[in-house]
Length: 240
Image (cartoon, rainbow, N blue to C red):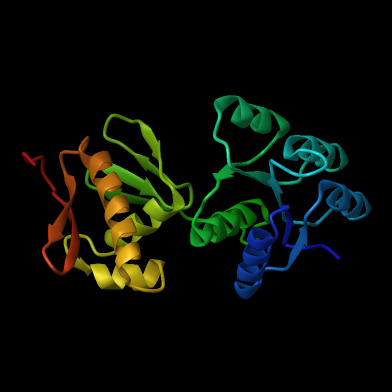
């Protein structure tokens, strides 16, 4: 049968966690811990699997070799790599094979799930006719934000890529322009709980967005002490 996701990961603990979490989120998942087993299955079932996730370091073939074999069988198969390495040469090698993306270990399981959902939605047939599709750009003063592409278009025309989590945080703030968004509400919505460590993670993402908006004369993120954050969008240029 076709699966939403095929995972090739030799670390048993990680493979179990990813598989269980994705199944809880409603995905059909098939997990292999060797490239040989995965390749044998894929050779017999090459089509309609929506996404393949390949660990770079496997005990028999390495992930690059496996991905190259998958592409020979089905050149249109979307796939990405899990890797403990981030060397430029490795990334270039994977991209040349046809990888959509890399996710570096360690990673947040929520971010992995969101990336997977975005990729599957992007590469699955869209049942809507073109006339029903509308722009996903949100104008924020002199910045434009495109949620589905994880992009912001800066005042100088430069496109900046966001991580999934950065985009999620910005989306929450952009839905409440010039209004206080409680930190607790952000944490519960995006992380599922408001514990100390998730609070620190949120602060990191807010800081990254703040640095990004330094190039804007109209957009800023401000703290409301003890409560949360405000995404301020000014109609006219002001000294920030």
